[in-house]
Length: 429
Image (tube, rainbow, N blue to C red):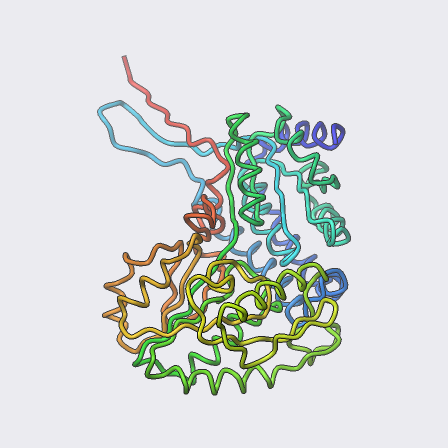
């Protein structure tokens, strides 16, 4: 650990002296390495955490897209900004902080890392990443990818330590800030340690996104999006749709189509390109999901599809007659379980959506876009998607509020999270 941190610190002292233009010139090569080896890298993702291979390939391609985005935009984002004041000259510069610690999850083992590391490194920092233990091969591969792309040794390093060593790393004076993507419990622990050291942290935590279908929505199109929004990556996503809020007049039509569409999903070997949904990443995760579902059924939820587990595989599941006190409504369900709740009015739907400790995103389906746009301020979320599932996009800031964390990744906001925003004022005497 000490060796890795020391190397990161030495590398950053040199890296920060390179120009921003020099740094971004490495991004096309980084993208090239990803795309040339995407099948090999995707196979490792699938082998380690069981994601269907087509989704693993898409994850690698999205990382390459991220590299291209910052290659095209980073210089504009971090350009010195002149401000008109009474002084002879005043401007703002954006300078790197130093060595940044990333603590990353297993569910998108490449994408989560790249969306943190690329803008952070381009801004002039170096990074060390404590990745999830069940994707250790992915962690090693990512370090080698940065090396193949020509980034100086020490710019990106894998930090293979156990979770109980993280507090020691945060306390190390070499570390200047922390970015964590994970559970709210992990976020609270990291924020506590960072607070003791007065170090900045960005927290991308859990979500319990609502998927709202209003009375006037195109149900067929909403169902098609709903299946992907809930079942992608076997439901193991913080931004997955989890609570389906349906207007009482369309609920039967929606459920009928939704059930058929889910039943048509092909399960099987995740390395086969025809497989659309696989098992969860670990048996304990499936067991935890099973408990949430069974408790909700005991409280009155009606099981209309799925509900069975075999080792780490949990059947795609639909529950109706869900109440706000059930685990599948109150808690984040990290798996292929859709909880259905009905409402009568838009105001009731907004209240149900906001009745959550999380605030990552919400999807609303309607044909009256003007009316729902007027309601956007009423949603306590980091993102509002109308007639679309919540998704991350390199061009848009990503992050949440409440127990979904704070800070933003991606876009201009993301690249400015780990910089010193320096004010400079010059007067001619």
